[in-house]
Length: 357
Image 1 (cartoon, rainbow, N blue to C red):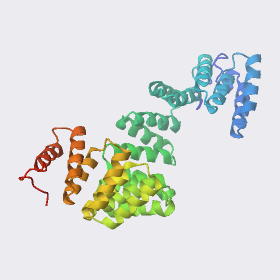
Image 2: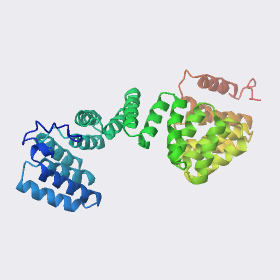
Image 3: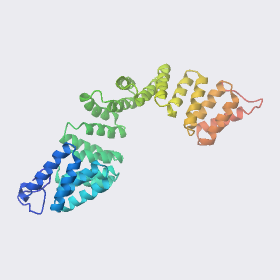
Image 4: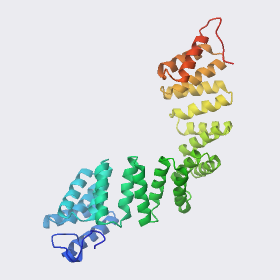
């Protein structure tokens, strides 16, 4: 059995065109080897010229269509790539590589269903190729089909234990199922070889955080920020950990850094405001809640928190305005909405009005 095509050489006929020794396809196999060499050198223009030439001379050469499809895919012309892969498969429906590449073209056009079908067909003709399992696993992961994804990544790792991408992706699938300890084990496997891979450090740090292992999470985020001082994701998450730990000065410093890195993001202003409230710095919190709502008017809690802070500062007119803005946007059945209505009544400039203490 030919490992790339699934072709049984002893019974293969001349019409197969798989390139094995049993079907008289040595010239076509040599052509494909030459195309691979050109591809490895990045010479796609030469590949295209040779494919057009061989197809003009031998229109039934499936590899000519296949490699022309590869060139089209490299150029981002996936419609043309699919057309050429389709022709190659029509001429030779038993060659695994054709399905693998067509599956990837479907994946690039967000046609997950056809991509999964093609990767599955490629497995039929080449069951030992780990890449098809890894690719199909990504399709399942993107569709939130986590159990199927885990099965495929596990098979890919079994066939190719050095496939670090499948460890990362399987870790993501485990994390999506809230199996954070198992996810950490997969991320650890990658970080053993690549200890400064910041993308994986972020994922592991988040998994630690979800498990309440804050010190371990902080070690990962500190490492990321050491390697990439402008990594806004790591800075913002570290700030959130500090906030949860009550380390308000550290949290405010990190939220401030996140704002410097992206002043158009409303979220660091909001959470810095929360930290400032805990620090009893109400004027600063009010200013930050204002900035947050300016950038994101749908952040209802920013209006609510601003109103509370304004009351603490006896800025009742501003509190009333913020409560009204909150009520106009919030779920009227929420606890905060009910409380806001109560506070509006208390602030209605009547002698019985009360002030938050």
